[in-house]
Length: 141
Image (cartoon, rainbow, N blue to C red; front, side):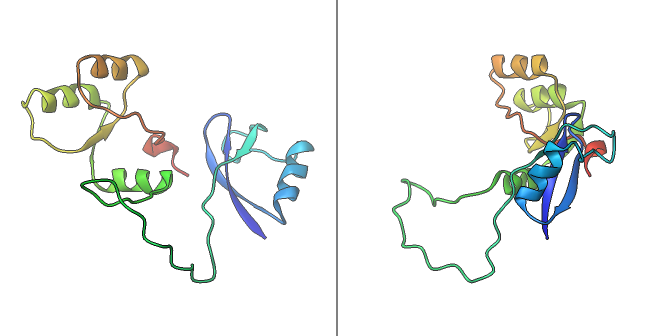
């Protein structure tokens, strides 16, 4: 058995268990897959990490960029880091980012929601923001 993380067209995330990757593709082609939240049939696999059972061989040291270590982080690992090391200010994100930028609020890492136009306005104002594909807490599955 193999477990895939799946997502529907409405961005609902869920797991599916299949005999193989080919089994997933066959079921998808036959229209047998559906989102358990909305029932949508447009289901795709999300990228997944590869897990090694054996201990990996040591990788020869490479030269790092001046002034720092080189580290690789997966998108999921990066998102986990952001979630654990930032304050969720929700829909107040654009205004709180402005307050921090103007030094009217304590300097700290924040996250929240902003529309595309709000994000563009923040960037135009010189406020460093990074849009991330983190679904709203109510959409976590």
